[in-house]
Length: 360
Image 1 (cartoon, rainbow, N blue to C red):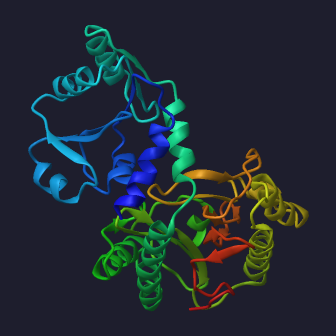
Image 2 (spheres, rainbow, N blue to C red; image 1 turned 90 degrees about the vertical axis):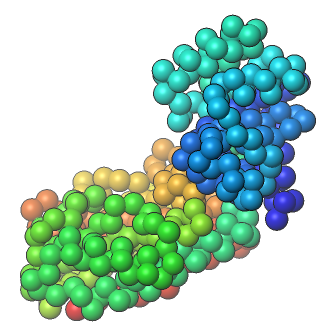
């Protein structure tokens, strides 16, 4: 396992020039490089050392779990300066995406007073993104476990989706079912919506209740050892009209067609276009306003993005979603989402749930 984390850290070291250091403060990235997830602290990487700085609350756990040296700080900036001076570091490069302006200004001023340049220009973020975009075997296994937990919970929830039950009750039960099966958290605020609200891609569960003849959309995911899953299914309650069935079949055709495009070397924009063209040709293009998919891993939305603007070529080890939808305001919406890992010749689908329309 240590070799795995050494390999990850080496992608950062290869990025650094002599007399440079990388300061990583995004807790998700810290977890990726050290195996220890916590809510505060910093990881300092130089050509010669890797040190995790945490406060008193986390030091005992960090020393047991982190795959690098863990140090307890009283004042983070003081401990960082001490480490930087010991290695004669002249430039510190930090992540840009997760650093506030006030924190950047503080580090910039503090380091400058000690003749150390501090920058956060996005280049470190890009380097870390390139490292994280390809999942290794251990990541694959954790994502698969997260998906298994989520699916088992969803299948149990299907027994609870009945007329008179509220969206919020179903959301609470689904979260409970996942945590009961080993999820450490939910991947995002669960979307358990019914009726006309299914036309809202990110609708929020309320005390609205399920009714006979409704569509019910469930967008759900579990977190297992830091890794997320993400799936959406749309079912009908009692019965479905011809229009509902027709829209469902269009979305399903688009989703399956996009799946067939997924393989190494395929351009993300082409995968998106495949699904979008089917929906557009059916006359519903204006009702599909989001991208066809996104990367999943330590974050629920990460690289690569399967959108019309993405020139990224799919590569073995990338984990993405395939989730086209049609949303008819004031009527209903349908989304079908799978989560996949790109393989040597195609893809592995993490999702084992049926996709034909289920009538509960």
